[in-house]
Amino acid sequence: MNRQKILSLDAPRRLWQDSRKLRFLVVGGWNTLFGYLSFYVIYLLTADRLHYLIIAILAHFVAVTQSYIMQRHVVFRSGAPVTIEFLRFNASHIGTLLFGLLSIYILVDAADLAPLAAQAIVILVSVILSYLLHSRISFAPTADKRGPLE
Image 1: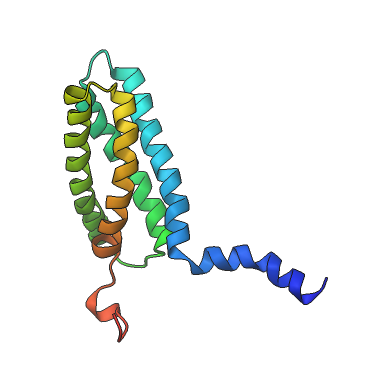
Image 2: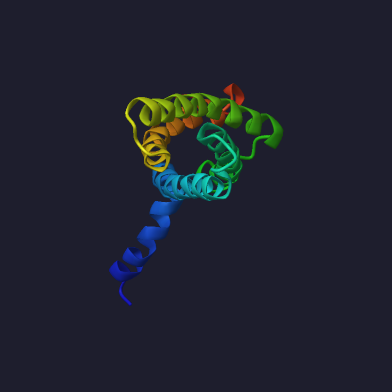
């Protein structure tokens, strides 16, 4: 095999290793699917007994826990203490949760969308909000770990 082929075969692995944004998009895609499926399954199992906003809260906490594990290990490769970082991660998600609850309420009660369709829309917008919060709060380097240019 010539050198060009070896380099081209190694390129996807290097891209994955070197690109936090690519890892965030891939993990974010998985987290989005997982979050929606969590809502979907809980909705199917409990819609006759629970209000859709309660279902959204339950699904949110299931999805956030899974998301933290993926973001910590795959995207940000964090070595920070878990307890403090998980608290920051959850604090970041409170903003996302409040945005999501308000948005799904407006989409269902004011715009008359079905709860499953409304949740799909809310999740897509929440991905962007989530990245901004995690990169600036949850997994932001502490002052002692920042480089001279940060």
